[in-house]
Image (cartoon, rainbow, N blue to C red):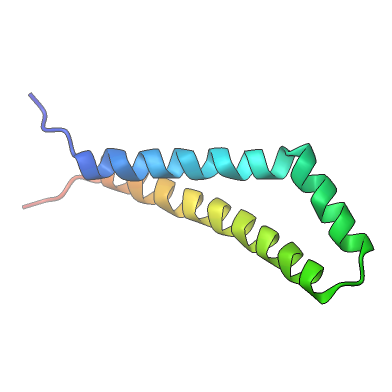
Length: 81
């Protein structure tokens, strides 16, 4: 019987969760309306919120891709002793 690597499944779960949050944020009507409102305002705080939303979206996407690459590489590349 093959031993299950729980750390690998945790990373896979975080990767999937990251992708789900990214797509929810990207396709959310409420967040898109907030972004449109922030773009129309001339507030510096609004611009800060706009930047934070986009940074969070890109962080989720990059984290999901990198963790998926790590899972695939660990799963298919076997260690040689």
